[in-house]
Length: 117
Image (cartoon, rainbow, N blue to C red; front, side, top):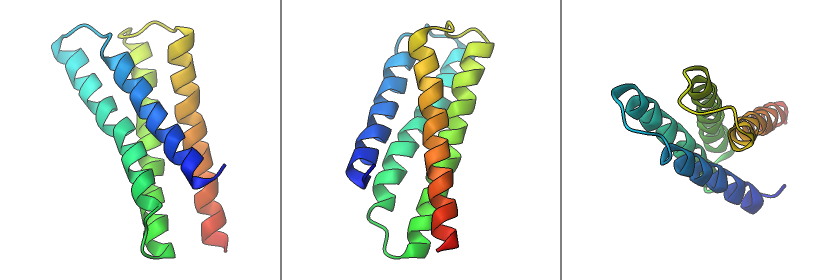
C-alpha cells in the first residue's frame, strides 16, 4: 500500500467513526466517549498525512508513533462503546474495530521496519 492509499484509508476510517458517532443519542457519558473517539480517529488521519510531509526520518518516525498511539486509542474507544452498550455489536461496528486494529498493526510494523533500517 502506498502513502496515498494509506492517506485515503485513514481518512475513510475517521469519516466512518464520525458517522457512527452521529447515530448515538446524547447523554453526559456518551458525549464524552464520542468526543474522545472523534479526537483519536481524526488524529489518525491528520497525523498520518502530516507524517507523509516529514522533514527527516526521525520526524517521520515521531509522527508515525503518534498515529500508532491514536489508532490504538481509537480501538480502545470502539471496544469501550460496545462494552458499555453505546453501540450494538453490529457488522458495521465490527468492521471499524477491525480497521482500527489493522491500522495499528500496519503502523506498528512500519515503525519496526523503519527503526531496523
